Length: 104
Image 1: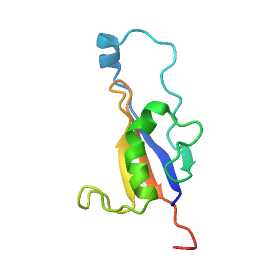
Image 2: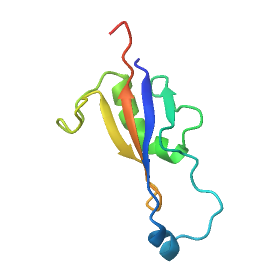
Image 3: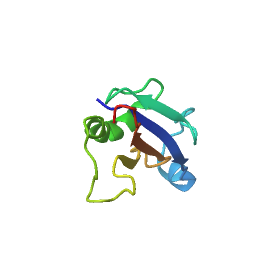
Image 4: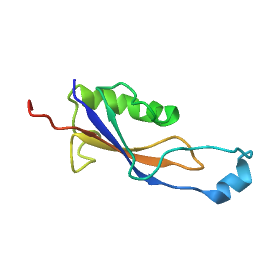
């Protein structure tokens, strides 16, 4: 099973939507741009947001088991995907890519 690198590429905040629809909360997201996680196969890395993992995990499972070229050539690197968590107020975009190993 392949290891994966998960990188926080972008974190966006839609303050207008928060002000209009969200109940006040003290703490919503710990992710920081540039932060990386290593997934051992399709296992959730420690510290990665559970909500983000729910979005990432089906693709991680595929990549970890050798799947490539999601959505017919969507990514320049066929062994990667760009995904966002499901938080509509402050979505975080993640690049998930297979880590090349010497055995490959």
